[in-house]
Image (tube, rainbow, N blue to C red):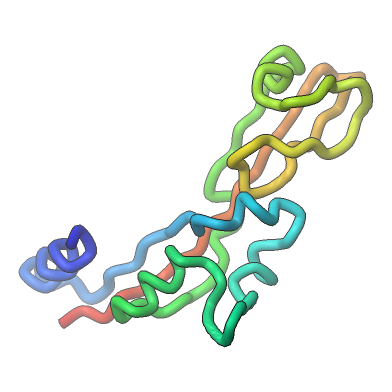
Length: 125
């Protein structure tokens, strides 16, 4: 419904393009798989992710991976509240719901998270 209304608004405004980034619903279940590989993943002969499938069924086309759509950084105190395990050494840690691992540097008391999304394009009627 929102997409149809937006497509209508885009046409009324006579825009040439309707391009948006989307955050795949099931990607957080596979945080160690790159987004580039994830968008190709199929199960039972169809695109695995339901949010990607919804957009494709609505007429969208996958354009590309939107690298580093989100960037979050903070000290170890910040990440300790989000990570369900003690942070004792530098490396990658998984945060529930995150699409990628968090890179932690214990010596620098710092963690950094980057999230990729997908650019999709809808035809303008």
